[in-house]
Length: 138
View 1 (cartoon, rainbow, N blue to C red):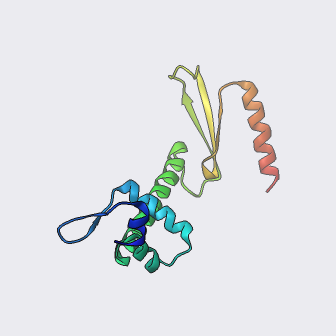
View 2: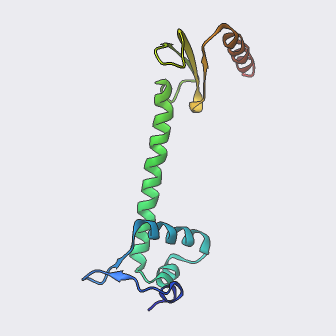
View 3: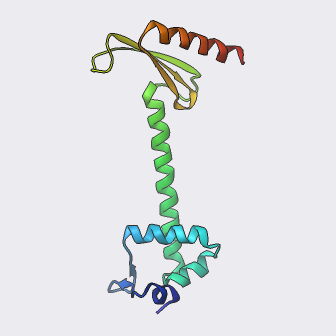
């Protein structure tokens, strides 16, 4: 039994080939502990009772999953305004059919996913002032 198994007071389940069976939640908790442990991967793997190659696989899988999630968030931000990454500002006119919008509205999309929604003349005046100030800062 390893130190981690002794501390946790549990024996890790293993399959017929001797591989450690750990739930996704437990694996994520172990990776969080690894991130804050300051231990090398080899030492941490030994500490928790898994092979280093298993820990390395978990870390690689988590890194790939996080990269995919970041890419989806970035794509979602771009899709909000239907813009390409090179656009600085874009305006989208929508006809209001939802309960919260009455009449037409104008959405001005900025780089980075920020946008402002204009639904009346007062908001249009504020938006014009904002765009004027943004344009003069260049």
